[in-house]
Image (cartoon, rainbow, N blue to C red):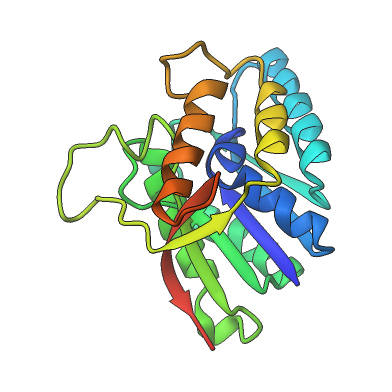
Length: 216
């Protein structure tokens, strides 16, 4: 199978789907990561891109695609440009499963990427696509104003007990983004969330998702 993870920013893919990426890769599936935005500062851009590539090597990602839209300015970017670039990625990869950010996240980039991803993943253009999942991102999903419109309600759990170490190791590559506990973007917080999600379904570690579409 081909798995596509669409991430608004570098490290979102590890925070939300890192253990699952490693699990799919270990099972022999092809995993692709599309990172939509990049830092405006050239030096920082190169640092974060290198961090992402190193993290993805650990997780077994087949290919990383950088779209290089301006960070925090997606709402100011013509939507047709975002839609067309993400659509091109989807058309080239033809994923069987896709993971996208949760539309209720606090960061506006996450909202814009979720909406554009759903446009690109429309079933009329993707007969091969069997499932779409929304993932949670520490410091974005849980920090928004709670309401029925943006709450993250997990209904799918993936057991990452055998890959949580790889997820943490991959996150450690993002030295420019990693913080100390009790900050949410810390190795300790990542492990705590994986244990919480795992305990819900009686496994040691898990990542949880919201099922958006599933074709059986």
